[in-house]
Length: 335
Image (cartoon, rainbow, N blue to C red; front, side, top):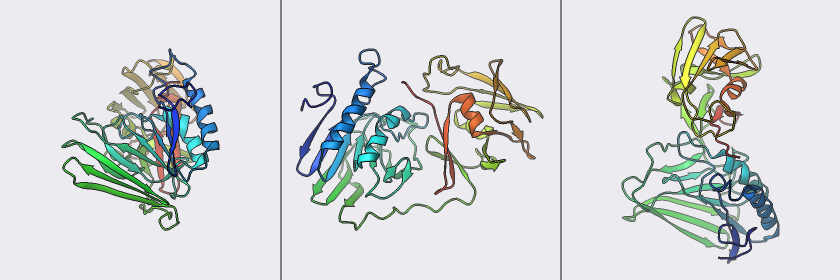
């Protein structure tokens, strides 16, 4: 392998073939924390310098853990935060990932927003070639195509011919399941066909679109703050909620979070108590002051602001005005 990476080894490197610049990165910085604590920073520095130098028409990157995961409770936000901003800046065309044993292809994305192929990156999870699969893979809102290859393995055939990139995806019996083309002469760089914005705001957790009956009421703006029904998030995470007239008692755990000193880092069940019209809550009887008060609506649903839920459980959030979606992201930073 080329030895032009930050460590002169076969884990991180780049090479050119024809009019394509290929980049190989290492996404295993959690596993390598003790052996190489500066891996992430070294990769970011090297990646920026590498992309600054290339003049190739196409840029294609490979690494293992997908930043737009198909797993229901795994988000790999650490991987996304490490690489995606640099990829956006230098417009890497396509990223290939593995790990989830499913096939998916995102819309072109830039800064987490659906865009065109002349400004966005398409992220592909390349499926599975053996018998292993996960039963918690799900269609996500950022996927244009999705296929769970549990019956038989799949393979990809990719051709770059001048301005045209083409990817065909087959099952092992050669059934075609995806045929995708990027044409850099401008023919297909228009905005992908996506659904129009929802009339009522939808709640999305880790990319999974939640609907009734899991979501009793849609997220809503209250006094300039985004509020969401507690029951929906607790149900998605597999927890339980027992509410009375004034209090909501919640038992749940937040998976795949390893932040030192955080009550969720042990991946065990913890008990949250929320009180109507109060900004004080508790986790395992320890008081927590929230940014906003808890609200109990006329139908008896306990509503919590996105900022307060972030304070309690570490979920980041953003509002996508293009699709009218409130997105919560599971915390799984291993930095």
